Image (spheres, rainbow, N blue to C red):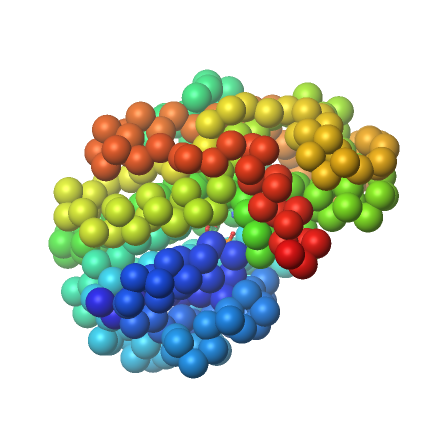
Length: 318
Ligand SMILES: NC(=O)c1ccc[n+]([C@@H]2O[C@H](COP(=O)([O-])OP(=O)(O)OC[C@H]3O[C@@H](n4cnc5c(N)ncnc54)[C@H](O)[C@@H]3O)[C@@H](O)[C@H]2O)c1
């Protein structure tokens, strides 16, 4: 099989490339290296085709996609810091770029999986969240919601192309996905906490730490994506992909200190001091994964302990 991955030098994209190469597929990636990195794919040199370019360049996208049997659209601008610091560029990548990829897949009649996000649910207080739940988002002037909005429009375009042009698309809504190669640079909490713990530096919680999340190991997410990609019954469908075990951010910090045998202290910073204006957090974000479990029998294998251990092992260079 020939697989084309947008954002293949990123965190999830590079793990997908690993899994595909391991099963003998030919992989081409397209990445502009904005949040991705050469080091994520250095071990794949000579084993995959690497194109440096932008998903908003239709000519490049169509050329790279032309010979693919499967397209995995992972390229996006993400991370709280990225969205708040470069809002226009981020919307452009997430909305315009995704439309280019989706139109190319329609024109070339390709099977495609698009990575959406639990952010589309916004701050809907109903938990756990299933695929039919409403979007509840704040005012557009709170810039953090533009990520949710752009991803929601991407999903809507994909669905419209499925209905009107028969696009063979499956949408996955990833909830907090973590594991080796994720960088803390753009605001992701697990790598940031683990790095602080390993360095014996204070672990800084933004807010009061009572906000909770559920974390999913990237290996589990990759398995789910690849099973869905091989299942025609998933065409036209939307699936949550997320872990099990709700954890407050304070509990996460404590667990990371315990697992890494760290001497770090926990400190707190108010959201207003941690982020530029335009940030707003949601208290809980719990996935209902009943739909994907019933459809393909998938459920995550990793626990939070094994996720933390894997992230720590990578930072320690083991
Ligand atoms: N990691 C998570 O917890 C999470 C949660 C929900 C959804 N997602 C989605 O999963 C996908 C992959 O995310 P990730 O965590 O691997 O992030 P990532 O930042 O590591 O990967 C995104 C990749 O896209 C590339 N990219 C950005 N703009 C581009 C452009 N204009 N043209 C070409 N390449 C571009 C980046 O360089 C990067 O390699 C994204 O669509 C993201 O929205 C991730």
